[in-house]
Amino acid sequence: MKKERQGLLPKTSLPRWKTLLLILCAVVSAAHLVFALLFGAVVVQTLTDDNLSLIAGSEENRNRYRKQSKNALPDKLWISNNNPNINQSLGRDKNWRQIVQNSAFRLGALEPDSAYSYYAHPVIQTGGTYPVIDGSTVMIPLAIECVRQHWGIRNDTNERNVVQFSTTHDAYVKLFQRETGNCFWFVPLERENEVVYDTDSMSGPHFSEFDQAAYYVNPGRAVDLFLGTAPSPAELALAAQNGVTPVIRPVCWDALVLITHKNNPVESLTQDQVIGIFSGRIRNWKEVGGPDQAIQAYQREPDSGSQTGMEELVMRGVPMADPQTVLVIEGMAGLVERVAEYQNGRASLGYSYRYYVDRLYKNDSIKVLRIDGTAPDDEAIRSGRYPYGVRYVGVIRQGEENQPGGLFLDWLLSAEGQACIRQAGYLPLQ
Image (cartoon, rainbow, N blue to C red; front, side, top):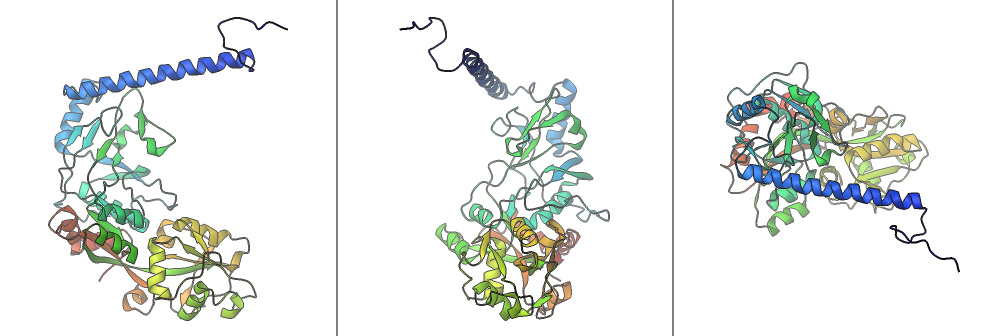
């Protein structure tokens, strides 16, 4: 029998070079782990000693940090949204104007906090009066407009997140269960060349030799205000289960719209035809004046904003077809894309909100259908001639009317707030 070679390497069926490579990788990984543990300990100790030496790489930067700690915010931020349901720029319009002159809503002072930044850089604390806002995707531009107006930003570009919404149902869960809101962050625009970002946006920023950190806003604070579509029955039940009575106030108009492929010859549907299609009673376009082709209908997942609107505004108690008949798509962008790209082209049908398909997620392969011959223009929505008009709402917890969320909701309903809503592209209440 052939004797095994004796040596430092363990017995293995792998070639010797592969074994050496695996051992080398293990050694490197262990070294990284030891470095991370030691560096983390240094950061915590440094903060405990109230030493700002890690916050910036020079005395000049430390002095700038101390100044900003007192003055709150720098002049410029990066503003954008890494959201798969948005494909349009969220930068301000060329005709944008400053409307708010003396904001009552302020952020807290900057303080270092190791819990929210690996490099122990400043965090904007929760003591300010600016609320933690969450809500529906369709209201993200309004939240960004509010940031511009109240934070006094003079310039922005569409590069990184400053407003992060959880989508309708998840945002209601956070509001009614008093869960922590999304902790967003920003970087002074003039420091952009000093920053190297991870490809995974969730891991946060990583900084090069300047060691200049992002500022984290409202960490650890519960959601104060929801903006978006009205709560579904299931979401109202969730509020009751958590002992919360929602205060619901309309803030602006929009409309639920039916979308189909641009090559579909059908231009209008009646309300009864829409109900028939999504209940499964009507299954071919020839039944509504179109070609002899099966209707490929799409709907959203339960408790999404557009699904709740569809059930309440359109179906009005008539059950929607089983998902085996009407395909369920998660995310508004997914539905728009499926309607636009369905292999049979003009056979597809779906629904969304007017603001969403006009301003947040555009696709040249879809068109909006008229309902009972009426297009969803501003006048028809406000007057009720277009039957699927909807009002977006602000929602707070009862008893918090005089806290940041309630006071901010009051402001949104003021003349100044409604002017900001109009500037963000929405249809004000009046």
